[in-house]
Length: 287
Length: 318
Image (cartoon, rainbow over all chains, first blue to last red; front, top):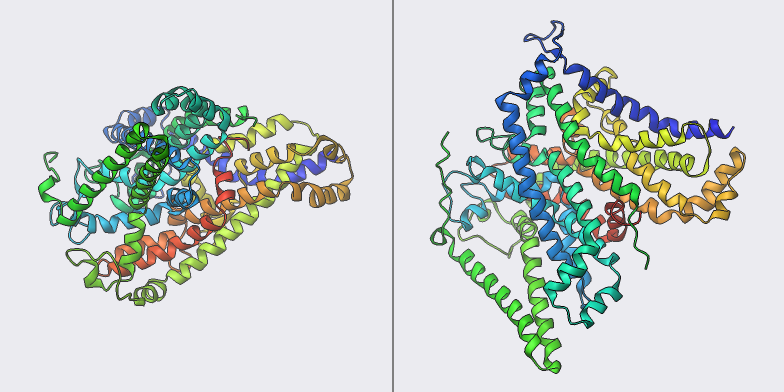
C-alpha cells in the first residue's frame, strides 16, 4: 500500500523526467554517431566515431569552446567581486539600508531579454545613449567590433547577474555569526585583515557556490548572444549554445549539433556535480 | 579579419556631460574613502559621523550606477521619438508621453504576449509545486524499494540543462502535436529535481514525533499532508513558488523555438521582435521593455525574502 502510494506520487515527475530529460540526453548521444544527410528526407547513416572526431577537431567547434571559456572568464570573477563588494557595503546597520539592498538586488528582476534589449538600444551606434556618452557615435558599434563584442556582451551579462551575485553573497554574510565579526573588530583588526582572515574564510562555501552557479549560467548563455550579436562579428561571440542553435536552425545539421550538445553536457556535468555535492553537504551555520 | 578596428574611446571623445559625471563619481569615491580613513584619526566624537557620511556616499553612488540603465529605460519610454535621440540626451521626462505604452501594448502586441507569459508561468508554477510536493512527500515520509536510487535520479536531472536537450525535445513536442501550443510551452517544466529536493529538505525538518504519526492509510496521509506538512513548510513552498515564477517568466530559448507566431509568443520573445521592428521608435521599444520587466520587479519588491530563500537554497541551509 505504502509502496503503491509512493510510486504513484513519484510517477508524474518520473514521466516528465523520462520524456524530457533522460530520453533526449540518450538520443543526443546516439545521434552524434549519425551523419545528417545534406538533403532532408534521406536516411541518416551510422558513421561511428568519425563525426565526433571531426566535429571536436573542427575550427568552428574549437572557436566556440574558446569563446565560451573567455565568456566564463570575463563574467564569473567580475560578477563575484562586484557582488561581494556590494554585499559587504550593504551589510551594516544603517538607516535605509533595506532600500539599498533592494536596489542592489534589483537586476535579478531583469530577464535576459529585458537586459539585452535595454543595452541593444543603448549601444546603438547612431542614436544609443552609450555611444553618445563614449563619443563613438557613427563609428562601428561595439557589438560589431570583433575586439570588443564579447566584452560588451559580458558586461551586459555581469550587470544582469549582479543582483543574483549580490543576493548570494549577502545571504552568505548574514550567516557569518555577528559575534565573530564583533570579536575581530574589538581585536582591532583592520578592515582588510578582517576581510582576509575572518570574512573570506567564513564565506568560502558561499563563494564556491557562487562560482559554480555563475559558471553554469555562463556556460548556458544564449539569450544575450541571440539579441545582441547573433554570434558575430566573425564568430567572435559564437558561444557553444549559440553554435548548437545555429547548427540546428540555420545549417540543418542535427548530427553535428548532437556532438556539440554532448560536449556541452560533459562540460556542464563537471560543474554541476560539484554543485550537487555542495547541496548534499548542506552547509549550515548554527547561530 | 580586421582585428585592428579600435573603438577609439579616449577621454577626449567622451561626451562633456559624461566626463563631468565621471569626475564627480571619481570625486565621490575619493571623498568616501577619504572620510573613512579620516574617521580613524578623528576624535571618537566625530569619528562615527564622518564614517557614516562616507558610507552613505559610497552606497548612493553605487546605487546610481546599478540603477542607471533601468532609470534611463523608464525615462526614454516617456519621451517622443525625436527626444530619445536628442543630443545632449534628455535625462528627465518633463512632459511625459504615455502614447508609447499604448503603441507597444496594442501595435506591438505586448498585451497579448504578457497574457501568454502569465498563462504559461502560472501553469508551470502550479504544476511544479504539485509534482514537487508529491515527490518530496514520498521521499520524506514513505518507505519503498529503490528509494535512494530514485532520489539520485531526481538529483541527476539537475545535471542535464535544457540547452543540451532542446533539440530532441523540440522533435518530441512536434511529434506529440504540441508545437506552438501552451502544452508545448509548459509540460517539459512541470517537474524539477530542484523542487523535489528543496521541499524534501523542508519536510525532513518536521519534528520527529510528527513524522512518526505519518504511518497511516491513504486518507490519513492526505490529512497529514494538508493539516500538518504544508502549513509547516509554507516558507519553503513560497520560496519554491517565487523562484519557479522567476525562472519560468524569464525563459528565452525554449519559448523562442517552440512558438512560431504572435498568438503564443511570450513577452520575452515578443520583446525581441519589438526591438527589431521598431528601430525608428526607440521610445516604444523602451516602453515594451518596461512592460516586460514590471511583473518581476513587483514580485521582487513584494516577495524579496522568499526569492532570496529560493535563490540561496543551495548555498545556505535549505
